[in-house]
Image 1 (spheres, rainbow, N blue to C red):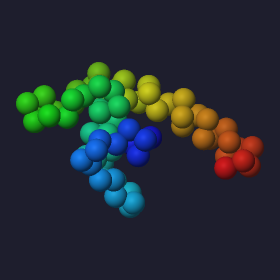
Image 2 (image 1 turned 60 degrees about the horizontal axis):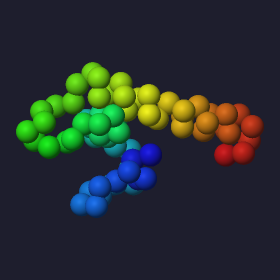
Image 3 (image 1 turned 60 degrees about the vertical axis):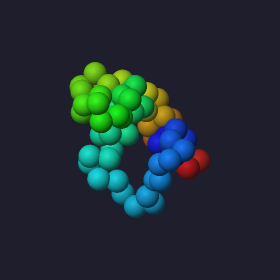
Image 4 (image 1 turned 135 degrees about the vertical axis):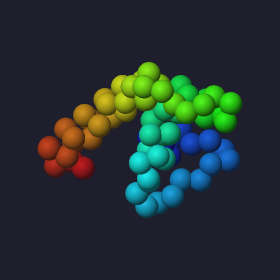
Length: 69
């Protein structure tokens, strides 16, 4: 999901992201601006990010169960 919504100036590493990167990416998907003046992401923006990716995670799991992925 992050690769689809990547910023123009951002590079995404191929290895597993750190916990801090994963939380920041969830917050960005949830609407956090990511600017230094915005402060750290809060629970609401992280929750919105999780709600955004939950249907995708369910679809991937269903496809794996059916052997299509």
